[in-house]
Image (cartoon, rainbow, N blue to C red; front, side, top):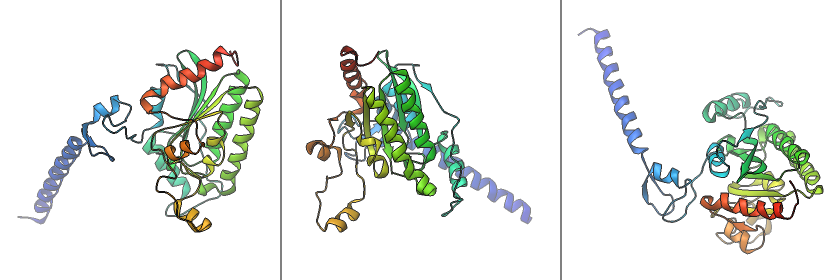
Length: 291
């Protein structure tokens, strides 16, 4: 047998093996196991329940696209500023160039950056909403995230409509250095002008909400809601314990602990969030706070 024929047979065997492995992975993806209670469930069942375990109420990570479908009236979402995209102002490089990392994230997620902004309605009540997506570089807050949120807030203020921001972030984006940290002040300033017009602002904290996002707009809501079991923090446990020289409770960075100590107002399951937001918005509508 010639060497070329032998190599050809080996290539065919490897190809068949890869096809079988791919089919196996597809079959496995039809089922998913809950990280908390280990319930094995059909993936479509989980998705129909907003990616919330029907047995233990564990909230699986979800995308900004899914949240748009879950939170708003059908076909009411109108995206804005979809053309904004980060550059590489510092020429930053770690294990790969920041510009390459951005390209990879855009290809993987289909997003221009870590937040989607737009105008939508909840039971015909018009709202402006920003939805962060942890899949895009851990939902980190760079210049584009800050700019998109600021423009969204300014539009909500100009149009006299309520504002909702769904937070999911690891904090400021280190690849943009000080430019990233500046977004905290910029977004907060826009929120102040929004509040001067007595317009409502709701934040929804999902897991995780940490770092500079927690230190700024995530905690500035008139009403702060959180998903059950969400990790909400500024710094990591080890950093805090080493700073204050004390041991901390196991659950001190969860939404339940923060609710108990008055940091957030409501813990709402993802399956009930649409109705809860409608109730809250209705209070403002009935009080003629906005039109």
